[in-house]
Amino acid sequence: MPAVDKLLLEEALQDSPQTRSLLSVFEEDAGTLTDYTNQLLQAMQRVYGAQNEMCLATQQLSKQLLGYEKQNFALGKGDEEVISTLHYFSKVVDELNVLHTELAKQLADTMVLPIIQFREKDLTEVSTLKDLFGLASNEHDLSMAKYSRLPKKKENEKVKTEVGKEVAAARRKQHLSSLQYYCALNALQYRKRMAMMEPMIGFAHGQINFFKKGAEMFSRRMDSFLSSVADMVQSIQVELEAEVEKMRVSQQELLSVDESVYTPDSDVAEPQINRNLIQKAGYLNLRNKTGLVTTTWERLYFFTQGGNLMCQPRGAVAGGLIQDLDNCSVMAVDCEDRRYCFQITTPNGKSGIILQAESRKENEEWICAINNISRQIYLTDNPEAVAIKLNQTALQAVTPITSFGKKQESSCPSQNLKNSEMENENDKIVPKATASIPEAEELIAPGTPIQFDIVLPATEFLDQNRGSRRTNPFGETEDESFPEAEDSLLQQMFIVRFLGSMAVKTDSTTEVIYEAMRQVLAARAIHNIFRMTESHLMVTSQSLRLIDPQTQVSRANFELTSVTQFAAHQENKRLVGFVIRVPESTGEESLSTYIFESNSEGEKICYAINLGKEIIEVQKAH
Image (tube, rainbow, N blue to C red; front, top):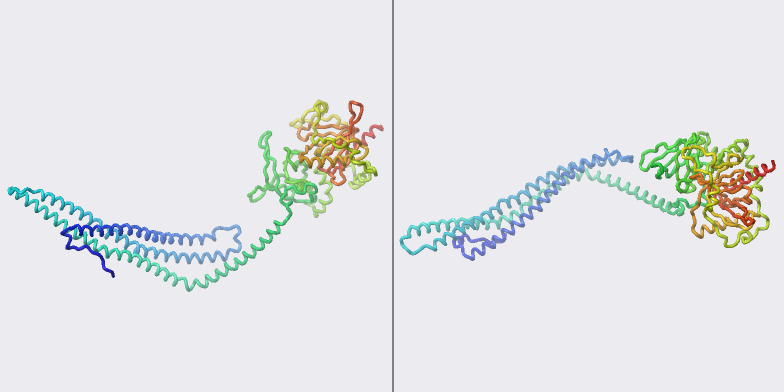
């Protein structure tokens, strides 16, 4: 062991400056040792605290492992092996907790306690003796100063004797305190080395005992168990990798589809519509009234179940009944300037709910499905076959007709016979073009302006609507709204959207209508005009009337006798147009073509117009 620096006790009485200088070195060393001891104690207490936290953590871990079985996972199928394995691990953690608790106790007794004792006993003793030595030194200095001031007169011998005794007592006290202080400082040089090593010996012994007992406890019986658990984890990992690869391939296949899958209304021109559905599911917007005139739209998931329309909000466990579809009716409606809306009406005629689909295809498929369900097709033995037979009926749900049309259908015993008659009379419905097709300049003058909105002049609007009133909101009928409707033998309603109108040069051929369709659609595409005014086209035996679906106010009225040509587009069956011949104030006549898009086939509108003209001819003959 290397030599230790010491303070010479023999020089304590002299108290020379050299001795005081050496003493200051020992005092500085003691102060540094005190600071380091405090820092070392904090580190050891942190280790002890961590060990205590490990005891509490392992105890909590054991409880959590046992709690896995009590979680009642909704997808807990096949967890039996996991539960049994976790139970075994819980027992192992409990045994480890015992070892950790024992280690924490050993660290407290053999590591933390010795350093605390060194600080509280040895360092505190040195600090106390330093204070006593300072007080004794001060008393000695004061007594020596008093002694030095004694006079030379002999009559003060008594005072001299007393002062001398006082100096001797102070010097003796200083000598004693210095000897004790020097001894404590000399001993501290040995004790500090012991104090630094004893706690670490206790720490090392505690850790060794912990690992020894742990090895004895687990090495033998844990090897086979850990091996089996590792094999199980490896097999799960293999299954996971296979499933991940499978999902990756499926993801690539699903993402490689055409962009139209993500577009809500990608096939608006020619959608592939299944009109034979007897069940349907998907998201729709539900119209809710929040006040007298205010409404909100909520996107919900709807599905049909038997004869019921169900609704299930996002996050709900099950759906609720929204509407009984048996014997109800469904039709497309114009609602709040929104596209693809349809309304379900109850059997007693009361207006039901209004829904909005996200595309034309979804809109028509929902209408067809609800129409099929309302006829209770789902109760038949072969509902799909019955739905196919009633496909034509489902198509008519898109375009509502009046009671006259229903009477005509009910009076015909055979629908096939009626359809065949319509086909035979096709030459009357749509006049055929002549063999020689005229040039476009012969039909429509170049540069003819196109009108995209039905905006009538003020005087004409007032003349057409003078005396008419808005529909009574309380359900009362007004006989003066359409006076010609009472005497009309034909009343049929179609939902149409106005595309445009323009002046033409001739009405001798239907080619003028086809050319007008081409120019109107081309102009809309060039100028990005997509908004269309939706109206109800009422065809009677006297006139063609365009009615606002919201206010029931007439937007335009054309005498049926002024309609000289009418035709549906040969490819896009929903496009229909007619030519109007109107006399001018100058004595001449003007020709204008009006182009519309219908919710149903344009042939139906042409058939209704032709039927109205035939009624006029019959009335003239009589």
